[in-house]
Amino acid sequence: MNLIPIIGLEIHVQLKTKSKMFCGCDNSGEDKPANTTVCPICMGHPGTLPVANRQAIEWSVMAAQAINCSIPEISKFDRKSYFYPDLPKGYQISQYDQPIGTKGYLDIETKDGTRRIRINRLHLEEDAAKNFHSADGKSTLVDYNRSSTPLMEIVTEPDVRTAAEAKTFVQELRLIMRYLGVSDADLEKGHLRCDANISLTDQPADNIVFEKLSPKTEIKNINSFRSIERAVEYEIKRQTELWQKGTPPTQQSTRGWNDDKGITEGQRTKEEASDYRYFPEPDLPPLHFKPGLPDSIDVEKIKAMIVELPQARRQRLISEYGLTADNAKILTDDKKLAEYFENTTSELRAWLLTLNETEGTEDEIWEKNKAKLAKLTGNWLLNKLSAIKQTHEITPENFAEFITLVYENKINSTIAQKVLEIMAQTGKDPSVIVDEEKLGQGAEPIDLEAVIDKIMAAHPAEVQQYKNGKTTLIQFFIGQAMRETKGAADPESLKKVLDHKLK
Image (cartoon, rainbow, N blue to C red; front, side):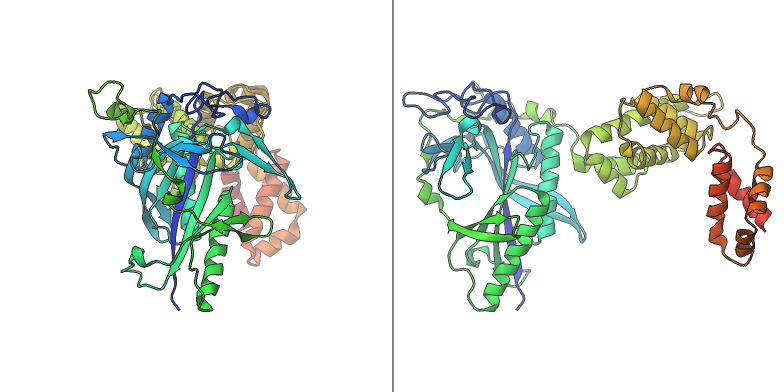
């Protein structure tokens, strides 16, 4: 039986505005004692009136545009009625039929190439409180600090086909939110929460009729990228076994992910929209996105504020600096790291133009040298500097100066590693460290031939093994020579002399 997974995702993203969605309460309640950042409005006391947080609306418009959604001229809030301890009003202010963004998409990179995942909608609502259930299941404590935190919900179309695609999509979405600066999007802290809707079909892959799909199962409580992948994989396996037994799901249901056991567990049947009894929120006016109307949100102005997004930056780092796709991805996945790299290369470009021996226009000089400099910067940044537990911040200016020393062969790789560690420990300039520690390759000329003769005399057996064909021993001799010179020799020069001597 050829079964195809049909997966849709619902991602909730907490916005890090200073105040809550419909009142002036502090929005950093997760760092405060329980039930201290609350007021009569977010607690739903009778007679109180909500006032929408304009920044939360503008940030939602920005996020919607970043994932290629269309913004309507009018949007509105609705009441979504249900009863649970974490909902103080007995309903949630959300959006039903007129969300802020619709018909978007997000491209993700998979092992089979680029996949486009369509986005059905992005809407804005208030978050619920946080429940703490006792181990025996007999009691529940509620912290209302989170109640009424601005919360975006992003709903995809059922375009995801594998657990790996689901994880990649959420990773890319989190990165976009962090680049926009609208959310920390920390899964472990609940800033970003993912629910996965999964069903299987035996329809042909190129002609799936979504209206004829079997009832879906929603997986909740997924709070890490690893858990997203594991939960989806498990649920696909569970439903596949049901299909093979001739008993596929016949009713929509909600299951929770138990990370310790690595299984999904039944919770309840899935609610439909009609179960929530939606109706327009009477205490909040519609949102206007049409230019010229009073209190309208300026969509074009917000669009102009969107920074370069991860996917575009990835491609630019590859095309502009000649970085590998892997290095470009590692840099882009950390916005601060990418900015550090680009600030460093900017300093390197300025340094290049100060050299007397350079000829040509500024662009010609940079084009001639940038690939090697960028590769050198990327390798030292990702493989060496990132591994050092820094006690002092190394500025892009100092790191650029360090790269120039390596680039001009003023220090070899062994000495460079030592210089970098001292920079991290002291915060000193690399040139100062080289002078103080007498680490410059030209400070004390080394007679490489004499060093190698000494080492060969001390290791006759290894010399003979090399001559007999065990050429990998060249690394042994280089290591011995570096130890003899206390790291001051240039490994490349050593290799050349060794090649000559040993042959």
